[in-house]
Length: 567
View (cartoon, helix red, strand yellow):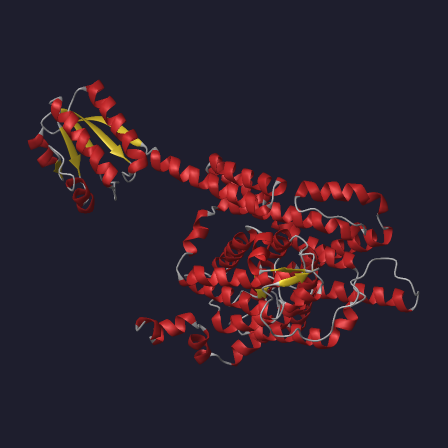
């Protein structure tokens, strides 16, 4: 307890206290530009992500301001903009299963509590069991699921389904009712968004020439701002088109968002019970209805957030524990204002970083923009076409399909593709939480197999005195899954060669009681056959484990001179 209240610990848990002392005007300008830029991105994205979660559009905005403000004080990564993400939105939809906003808000609260507990207890190591190939397979499957979920809005039809197969079966049943206006609006917005994305790479003039003057610099900056603000621009223009049809033509030929309640949501705890007809649904029953997604969603959100921190760390260490605590508290805070679960968004983090953010204070301006939008601009969101919001999601998510990682994995280690591909297929065919668990299970099986079957190099060598001996070198620790395999191999080769045996223990950094008992039996077996068995370079910690069972004729040596004398 005394250690927890030291200045070092306090500044580590509230990072704001460490960097605010060095804050200057340059930092303020960078944070202002980045915060406003991210704000212009998060408003249309949050409206669109609500659609993925099958919630009313305002709930995306509700989850985009308080968490962003809290992260200023708690977050350790300047590039993370806390708020709704594509992955969390899809997991929310699959967990809540259309039960309504009350369940989504409760899920946000429970996710935050689980993340906070994991951070305090130092259990973040759990996400280390999700390997790179499994993560890529999961992310790619999520991207295809999200793209599939937006097809209905681009075509202007009704469709549902929780898995990839269910979605496309539902789409195929109603595709005959496709709306031409929605389709044109959606496809046109996708094309424009992808073209505007390319503008960020456009440069007018050459940096090395004298013509690269202030005008070119301003022009390039303007083009870049247009590119990173493309989501807001598309939503505003399509909203104006919707407004024109509604007021001038009196008929809107495509589906629009509709009414969004103005103002900020009430600040209150999420509901832990609800009335459904004449029945009261209690907390435990609500949790039971949401299922295993309550535990899977917070872990995936943590994986997403820490991946962003590492991507923008620039060689610095990432305080995973602090990030777990920060994102947990932010989700608890978001649940108090009726938000659904969120995390750090990779697309907004990239915008934040390229905008020149200097500290987490950029989240202040992002949060203020969302609050202003809720207070004053919700009446104008009424006319935004659903197809335009679907286009925003499609243009952002299409780049989440990680096809580019297949070739490097194939060149590096082909067997790593097995858990990755299995996760990808399982997440498409089954529910996401089952798919990711299958991937983790395959990873654990692989780890256990390699632990149970260590590689052992065998070589017949001669001592300096010319005595032949068999040198066996295991490549890893001796623990209970592997000791019988190692013992059997040593016994088989020793009988076959019938010469002294030396086991090189240089790579054995640990052992357990089962290994010690097997070594005891092994030395006893060699002693009965009157065949010498020696152990080279055994670590003192391993010797202590082996000697705990007092094996007979357990002989160790540490240099060639000792071996010559033993042989």
